[in-house]
Length: 436
Image (tube, rainbow, N blue to C red):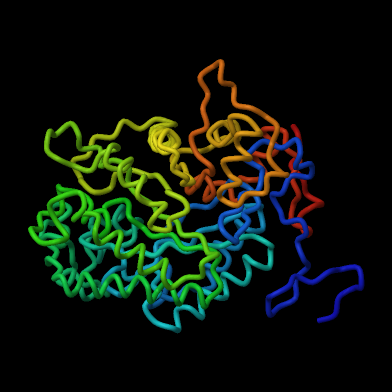
């Protein structure tokens, strides 16, 4: 295909599309933009703004392979200004999928399908990551819409499931009518560490910009962290050090096989919301303790979620119920002089909410803090947090899930809402949001 001399071609992709320079979602005037619309550089990767697409399972893969569905689904966010899209929980082995239709990266052909999605997002001059995961005892489920319509959770062998081959730290099912998992052997745990590393290598070959390890929501790594689900008496159970051993071995194995300039994220459930029961569980205090150890493990950002490990959890849901957990961890890290970026999640549905979560305390302080993480200090916003009214910086980025499903143009919408003029994709510039 030919193109006019004035039209620059996007680089590094096998198909023709116009270059997005600057990329969609970038402020036209960076000097006056709030922190939310400032770039963030982590190691060798610069992410153009702080509004990112959280990993969201779509239950639409074929034998673990991403399909045209994923190309369209994930590509739309890059077109509409999301500076980072993290691909859904991707299993490191077949039995590590949540459902038979989940994405995987346990064989090379799956990296080929991944690369198609990565290349498109890169063609839009945006970043793309992938979340590596193992579902543990919460594997072999059906898709949510089947669950809701038919009142069943478990996918049986006739439906492509593996209810008799689910694994966990201990043989404790998540709930009634879920699979009863088999306790992993030490050799199997060590094999899974290698599986995470092998999947990470395939992700690198496919061209992703960063990797996130899924340690949240009651899946395998969460199950090891919690004393409610980890009853082992060997080196992987009992003390905090032992219960976190599998996680740290996984982080090390992945960090060792990815480029030194590639960011490594970790998502955790900051609390199980089981404190009311009076038995030892994973709490915010445990998460703070863990967070302080992550910089030395090569982790660059902690993605703070919560819950998912116990059916009996009592969660008081409100707009900032998870953001406040991120803020507590960030404050504890700051008090100890630890350098770890924090991502906040949960019910982030407005521009003002997103802006307030990440707005830097002061431009100079923010520049110094992020400079130690490689950020460009020349592009730091001049706006300040309203400290007199108790506002504090709670995270360095927001990761948004369901709101992006409702509004794929969420970045454009909140930019308009808080008065930031941002670049749109070239092909969409003729259709700006209309004030009514």
